[in-house]
Structures are given as C-alpha cells and as structure tokens.
Length: 131
Image (cartoon, rainbow, N blue to C red; front, top):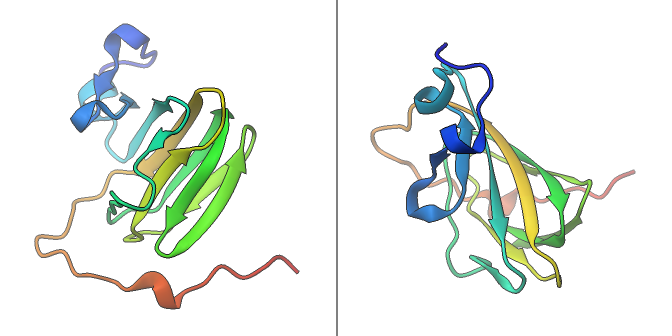
C-alpha cells in the first residue's frame, strides 16, 4: 500500500468529473477494491438516458438526499441511510429527484474488464418482493 488515510486533497477524480476515488490503486495502492463518493445536485443525473455498466457488482450507501436508480428497466427509489446494490453487467443510472444534494459512498471490487464485452440482457432477471 502507499497510503492508509486518504484526504480530499489525495483523492482521484473519476473520469468525466462524476465523483472521486478515495481507495483505489492510484490513491492508496489498493489491489482489489475501489471505493469513493459522488454528489449530485437536485434534479440532475443520468436517469434513464445515459445508463452505464461494468463487470463488477457494486454497492452504494446513501449518505444524504434521495432519488432513484434505474437498473435495466426497473426504477428503485432510495433515501439517506439506504444501501443500493447493482448486479455485475447491469445497465444503471442515478437521478436525484429531491430538493437537497445527493451524496453517495460507493464500493466495488477491482476486476479487469473483459477484452470483448458481452451484452447480458438482465431484463429477464427481476427483483423479487420481500417475503
């Protein structure tokens, strides 16, 4: 490792200015994890129009605010204190539909992207309601 405590001054900006990596190879020398944060102003986000995916599962903790995440063709609402899970390869996008800034802490393992990305149609996998 290269650093144990990562301050705001030591964080690395995510591509496109969409947030910051705090625990990552370039900030801490981490080998297997990537953790960081992002913020969104009210009434902003990628929503349904700019979905992205990656080969790792991801979970996020909502620090402040509220909004929704599109995962494939499903919308899931969240608020401060909730955890959000995104399956590997699932297309997803965030939106802040609240009046306050949305602050999110995220974590995902570091995993090499496949050379040829295959498309996995996750629309056939639906979230089951809690029993």
